[in-house]
Image (tube, rainbow over all chains, first blue to last red; front, side):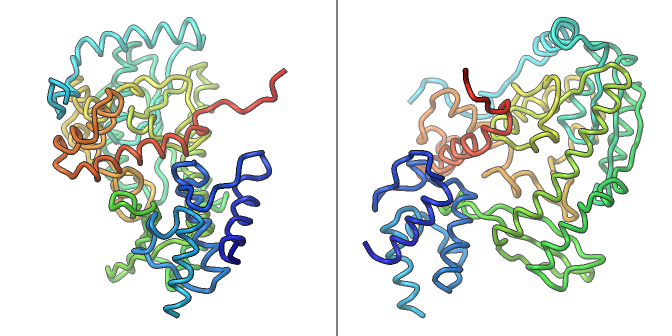
Length: 84
Length: 323
């Protein structure tokens, strides 16, 4: 697993799943559909990504295509890092 | 497609029949469940609390209803004026209590302004603020923007980081919670029950503060759509200033519509969307009624369901470990 996905998975497990026995999301699982994250959860995730990877996420980038699964986040972070 | 077209007609209410039903329900609940002798209603000057106060008077008579006007530093003067007008119109005893000193002592304004200044360092005396929701209806993820206005009228808008957003909301929630403390002081003093004033849209979508405006002993219009509450206000013959009041939060210093802060659409459209979802209408039907694309209508449905999930706990009793 990539470093990006491993980091985000760990963050989700530690902050949202809290060891309550829920299955960790698959790489392509939608956080919304699987009710892993609500809107506040996404704001927490965005803050984590900005802090961890050192970039700002624009308003127009706050879309499910960039943030709603581990694979989407990995691709998004790689695009952002490539553009930097 | 269903045979009956979806639209404003779907929300048509037999106001007189509903008035009779509520007027009978209130004394039954008071005597059989709550065992209290009258009702306390906090009157904001908006449509919902005005209709609740008027319904309470219809049910029990003016002598059994106590009105509270609880302005604070950021309240619009119009709200208090309309509140007074209503109380006089209904002939109820009422009290105006400025809660700003209590909020000041609790740090409400200070905590809010400190969070705002972390985002807009120039923010200070004479500036105004509000929070607006963004993202969701355009297919994005909901987030919140802080809008501030300098004393010379210049506005700027900035996306709120989570920590600052939560602190601003937590600080402003003091307002609803202090108001509720006042409601219950008077309810205890008079041996009355406290009326909660959410309409169906607010109640269903969790648009209230837990242990704040969400706390009450009875909620007589929580089954009525906002459109129906306006119809009931006109049926009850409430003053024009109240019947025509535009719904605002009256919580932030800049004028703030409820749809800016919380709902995906203006209330008349949200009512239709919620009714349509409740009655199993498809996103395509909703799209036709609201003149939007089916994809947009689907996002409105998704947003309604997401808000229900996110706010379910607000109205729930505390969780207990089962035997």
